[in-house]
Image (cartoon, rainbow over all chains, first blue to last red; front, top):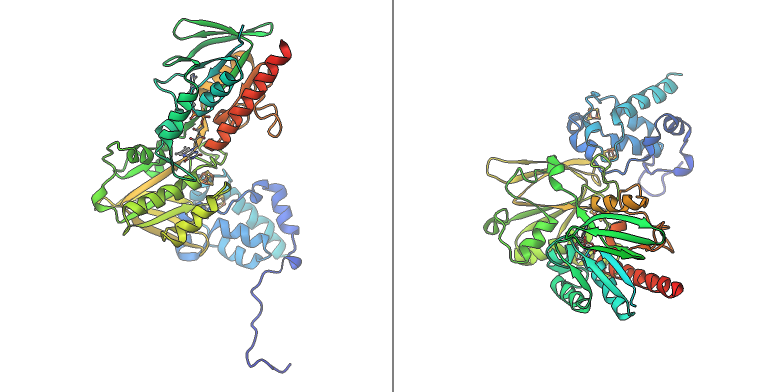
Length: 113
Length: 339
Ligand SMILES: Cc1cc2nc3c(=O)[nH]c(=O)nc-3n(C[C@H](O)[C@H](O)[C@H](O)COP(=O)(O)OP(=O)(O)OC[C@H]3O[C@@H](n4cnc5c(N)ncnc54)[C@H](O)[C@@H]3O)c2cc1C
Ligand code: SF4
Ligand code: SF4
Ligand code: SF4
């Protein structure tokens, strides 16, 4: 197609909620109902020893998964060291470490299919 | 004979209810465990949203309930029910029989030292919202180093919205209190940079949003969305505050000379201790349980027992006073019906 605007639109980074497939997140929530209770306070990310270098953040993982950005989420999860520091600080009492393991299992097995 | 109404707690709820019951021709007895009336409001300096002096409010209420029977330094030793009457034994040896009891036992401040990561009681320059009010009332506080106040931090939700601290509810008044106190400190130290660390800003009341925009526009208060994860003391005595700036999504730190913790409103365990003697239910948050939270907030599960103010959950002063009046009217109606 001819570029009539004189500039190119890169692949949209906008979130399209109409296109979000919720199947896997629902599956995650069936096992980890607390996945929906995050209030995005940032305590987990602020204490995460991997976060500063890799961008790992439980908060962002949960957020990305719910916005259909699974690739971004799984990339972050891959730098988690499972140290459990985030588990200790979460004011909502979410078992974040267990949650990360469930994310890995549910999303990765799906991916490898 | 005038009907006796026993009011447990002489904070603003108890005082206002007593004043109204007097006007309606009844005989309230206030039982207050401390040595003065006024409760928590008696310790505050200026009240949001209009910066009304707290002392003015308490003095006015004290004046309007001065004809009540008031026992200071007195607690309830025991409470039991006999048919349709309640028998109270007081710590001063006096016993009272009544058909009507009003709980106005209020709340307790969340003990900030429980959140060890914020360093209250450990570092030199960490105070609470309540300490700051106390200091503004002219009481000396060596943690307030007035010479070197260049940067000040406020931590919202200290011990509120925190399931680990077993205080899951929002304390409702601390967002607006933080903004009020930030503006007050900015007025005292115009060159200071002030940071408020919040998770959500809950500014629901009349004029609260105006306060917020004023803090941003006129006072340049900085708002950072992220819960403080830890505070440490640097070599020079300044405090290093760490959080995630969740709007940018990056870890953030800032050094401050003073850190103010917005300690929340927790239930007063006295309420449960007294209520359990007549099998009154306690809510999941530890506060007294109203018979419902919409049309019967001031009613309990037991005939003749009523609630007003922060004993059923976090409330502002105007909300507390409105409930006190409403409870007084409920009691009046119950008395009339029985006649
Ligand atoms: C830091 C802070 C600042 C605030 N600032 C404002 C403000 O600016 N504006 C505003 O609208 N609201 C403000 N509030 C809210 C305000 O403090 C409450 O609305 C108010 O204190 C509720 O009054 P109360 O009478 O229900 O309870 P309380 O003030 O807690 O009074 C309860 C009374 O009962 C007594 N008592 C307790 N147990 C017993 C017992 N077993 N026997 C006998 N007596 C007992 C206590 O000694 C006390 O005197 C603030 C709250 C906080 C935490
Ligand atoms: S368990 Fe993973 S996400 Fe949590 S603090 Fe440790 S490295 Fe970070
Ligand atoms: S600490 Fe808990 S509530 Fe806060 S952002 Fe992380 S997972 Fe969510
Ligand atoms: S009023 Fe604000 S600071 Fe207080 S508990 Fe609620 S959200 Fe936190």
